Image (cartoon, rainbow, N blue to C red; front, side, top):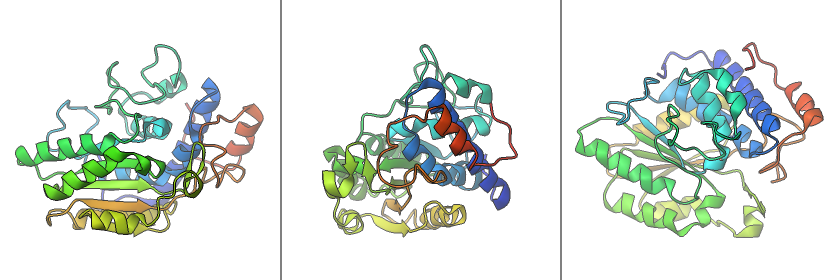
Length: 285
């Protein structure tokens, strides 16, 4: 459960450890999506360790809890790490990432009962729709809790995202906080080259959302403050959107920027170089 009296230094150390986990996980199986995962680490640490009310006993219906849904499921390694580091399952299980019969598949799935995962995700464009359903359910249940959804920026090229955006605004789903990981890169190149997103802030505002931008998405305090600001804007008749500006591959100098590490695992030499840049007082799995 998140603690509003968080220790920033400890959480910054956790960010470093989560990055270590992600890189070791993708190296161990020789596949995965480390760039976006380590680029979005501050968001996951802020959400689970400073902002969101959650319970690792894993109630199926998440009653009286905040709920998080990952739409861009390919970055799931970072989610698995933060769940394990929050006691949802044993940290040692991270070593099974993307292996045959593992619960930690390349896209999140509840099929094998993995704690903290309630819906399958990774078919881009669908997560916001699911989040709307969950948020409306909480309203019907009379719960004063929030639903959080994370999407990728390349995912904004999916039409279902905009159908969901219209629906949420029309139905005043104001307990919903969606975030776009705005790193400007997708698997085939930079978003501006593949299919320009143009002015996302203006688009989402035009669709009836309350929009805020976090310019420093890899500054943990800025991310915490942005999430808290988003919470303060809920309950006022509009869904809330955060444009979170991050850097793909953040924390490892040779991975930062561009899209080269979107879907490429580090080899052993690259892993050693990366881990040398990510000191942590926590133990590796």
